[in-house]
Image (cartoon, rainbow, N blue to C red; front, side):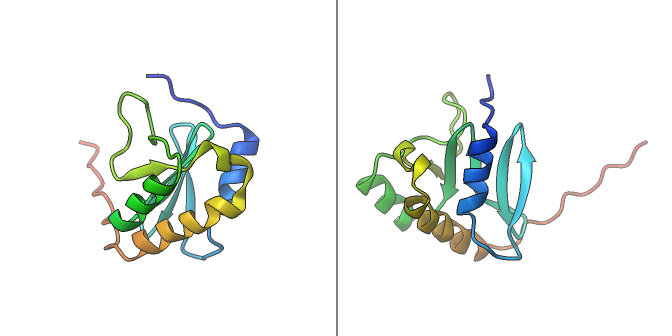
Length: 121
């Protein structure tokens, strides 16, 4: 499986649509980026595509009204995530509200428990 690499412009665009909130944490993920709240990812960057984790109602609304795309590897898209329309890559005003909805949705989920460290025996 070939992992697409985002350009520096893609990374900047991704960061620019994230909510300005102290709980937002951006981490590298497999050469791409993920945005997390309480340890749970709410948005990610896969190549040039921004994907968001929305409530079922918001996901259905976005998919019915816009040309969304799968998020993640073509052969194994990430369940629960939807890729924002490619046409929005140059329109932060279209993407920002959906990223904010993803943040609000995931911020309301239980925090992700930290993984237990394995002993080095």
